[in-house]
Length: 347
Ligand SMILES: Cc1ncc(COP(=O)(O)O)c(C=O)c1O
Image 1: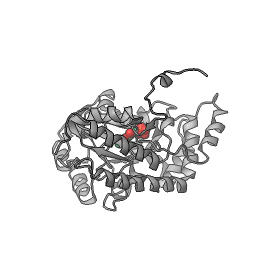
Image 2 (image 1 turned 60 degrees about the vertical axis):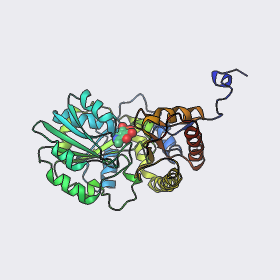
Image 3 (image 1 turned 135 degrees about the horizontal axis):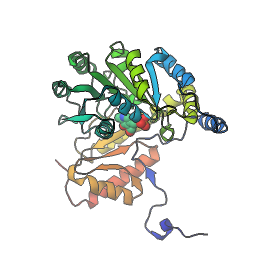
Image 4 (image 1 turned 90 degrees about the vertical axis):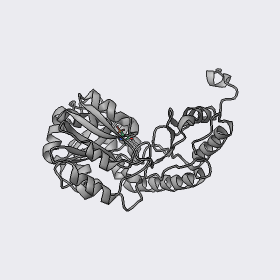
């Protein structure tokens, strides 16, 4: 038997629990691995450049025509394509999904961050007020990553009504499938008839395809066509197209798994209430621990216990909901981290 570096670290935990990437913990959905194998046999062929079959399946699921759907190499790439298609300034909440400013810059735009409220929520009135003459796009992350908070129907109605018609409102619904609060609208159902509203979704999260890079957007046909012009040809690869179709066929199982995650989210949130002040209620598959200066200590201490979470220095820690056993490992690691913490948590 070979001795590995891990064996030599005598106090290293036997298994590592990955709760840092907002991924599903259960493996691919039924039928997906077989679809990937089938597509792999044709790996010498180019993919369908227009992803017709997949776009039609997504369109049927969303109740729209396929000319409103654009697929891409993850919804993150589609966000960059959206910025590239309109240029100018991007208004977004902050702290929010950290890729927004990076992708905006990569696509030639500039970003205007608008601080979250003390409750870790999007400040939609401030975001509307931040829209200026150079603004071309404003993004609402709903539910928000990493805070898990979500904007409700009435505040979104007011916000969408305030945004000028020549500014795109991009509602990033990467975590839509985990939403249980009936006040949090499905942006496509609520605002899909507005030509300047774009809904971003992904198969990386609830659908379990993070490694294959498959996202989609739903937009007015003219906006979709403009985005289509800046998408790199063939960027939705053949394996992702096949896997996406298979995943969509497994919707019942997807919903069952999401229900397990949501139940665990609520259980872990309940346990955290006694450990960390002010954990905001989450509508995603993760929880935000606003531990401030203790964030890096908590991240490192959990990692030392074999539990990988995402630490945002000086701000907080985001833990992704895993299986019940993984979540218990996290809670034990967190209790240990809090006992060994050098700095107190913010009151
Ligand atoms: C809010 C949000 N949007 C988009 C993405 C990117 O998803 P994709 O894997 O489809 O690029 C993530 C991934 O973490 C996310 O949290």
